[in-house]
Length: 153
Image (cartoon, rainbow, N blue to C red):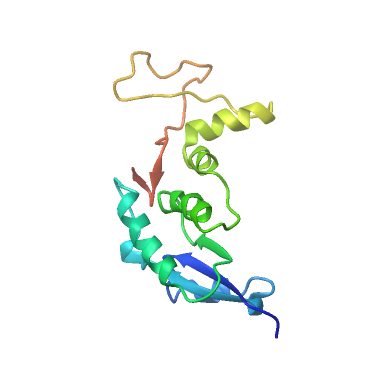
């Protein structure tokens, strides 16, 4: 058998393994846990504590680190580009992760490439302008710009 690639998975648990083992060429990968579910940030987060714990586990890993992934979403996904840069794995930028996770910023990016993107605008609790501006009319769907696990972050 050829060399297996080592993939560190943030928040890997037993429930994730069947999904990961079903990816094409799964036999060429070895999945290793990188922080437990309970160690992953949620709610208001400070990236420094999970980053230092993830560094300690990564530094102690015996073998190559061929990829670092997460089987989850914001805010944990912000750790991937930072860890990827430090451990020289292929990754995206932190800016792209934030733009994808933040619904307003994501809409601004999508509007740049597609004309059919629906109108949207910002509505804040302290917003001076009432809803219905920026070409957005009532009825409208309100959604937090940044959230995770169905909670406003």
